Image 1 (cartoon, rainbow, N blue to C red):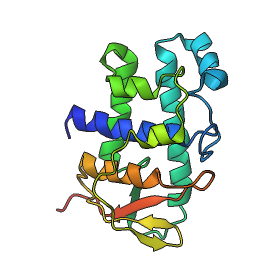
Image 2 (image 1 turned 90 degrees about the horizontal axis):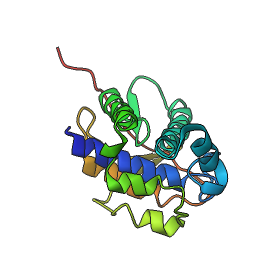
Image 3 (image 1 turned 45 degrees about the vertical axis):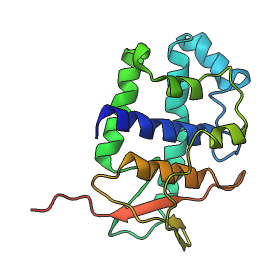
Length: 188
């Protein structure tokens, strides 16, 4: 994947993560991106340049922890992945990209900068409008959430766009795991 792909996936993650904050859909117990919430504290602590990136990392971690707790309940023996807990290679690339932005904040793409702007009080509809629907996902309902056909090993950004758009349909206070499975081991 190239940097533009990683930035696009990161944008999808951040958009859904911001929607999940308690001020909006209450999927995780954070309010780090809101000026009247944790954003002011982070600005006082880290300054106006670093605070939005720290808030972004915080909401991504809250979303990841939610997905991990749900993924751990799935049957073992096969790998399970989600928007916030993608395959290890993609997860590493996303974390490295956030680290790069902290070192070089001038490199943060404008759409990511806008999503993390604490002065903007997005409505759920505004955030939902920022993730195009993408290709419809074939979802199989399970007792764990929705299993979607994925392409472990090298999912395209469009797949993550579709995952993000599907998550945007979750109701307030009712986050439903959307996951894909597969074996990411390299054949011998």
